[in-house]
Image (cartoon, rainbow over all chains, first blue to last red; front, top):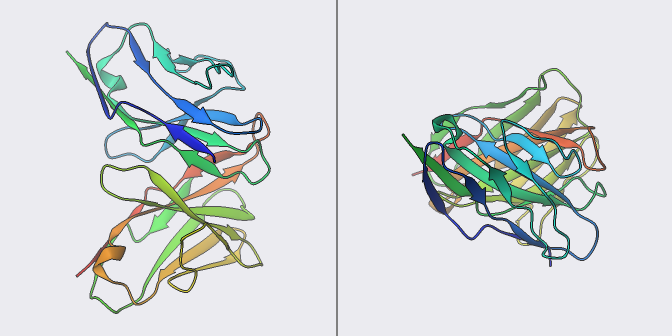
Length: 110
Length: 118
């Protein structure tokens, strides 16, 4: 079954510290993986997708098919990074459906 | 950029009444839209895929007679919660896709509608 697991509900770090938000998935085919972010009082928005292989707001994520992981990383956290982060998986375009993880709340302390 | 709106942003209703929630793509057309439900401090759960001009596709466990979806135009999908009960209280979010990089379209999300059933 398709599943996205985010083991941490809350991750609290100090400003300037490295950040890693964990995401593991299970899918039998070739999924596409995404990170969505929801800042306080704002709607959900796309942060990055694995196929782009680019850095957005200093965040990167590498798809590791062997470990079925797609962890989100940033070397130096900023206070404005505080938000809810959701890892999501799609079936590669067959239906455009997204399966979301439970989300991780990132709190960056000053 | 692409914008998806929802109306109303919040609604309170009495048990047994029906509530309609609108989802609009403001500056693009969408042949499909998606409806999600989000419980407090939980993830988004896909409820159904709304298809313009045809029947919606519901996810397993979602009552189609309870959650009526109509996609009447390329910019509007509606979700009607029929005979609402307190357990239907939740945050309902819609999204509409736009083709982008990769095989999966980029989803643009509405701001959500908070439904409270008394």
